[in-house]
Picture 1 (cartoon, rainbow, N blue to C red):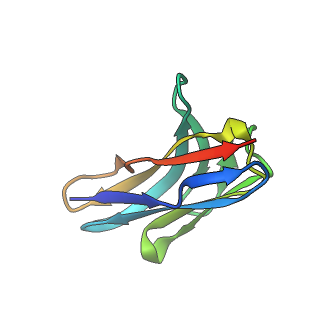
Picture 2 (picture 1 turned 90 degrees about the vertical axis):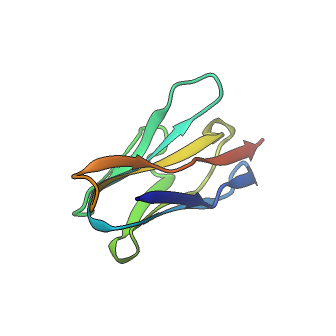
Picture 3 (picture 1 turned 60 degrees about the vertical axis):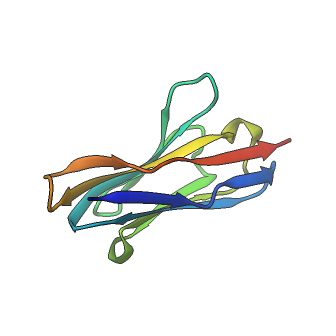
Length: 120
């Protein structure tokens, strides 16, 4: 079974930084796109950043210039470096990886979510 485990969330003051990690484990043959989403209280889940297998990245307008998504294919891990954090970045952050495994062709798997809280 494929599992995604997230780490790195926490409480930080506005202007601070956090780095999120999301590692996939299991019988994995290949990973296509990886992404980070977030969901603030009372709001819908929104896409924050994506990275393709070739390393091409895209970002939500609200985080451009502040967040950086990256991946380590040898570790099946995706990262989200978050700088210049704002109170409006407060949310539960979820990673997603599109994985080809021994049990299924490319399927989207999700992490358990990690809380990021930014105080003003």
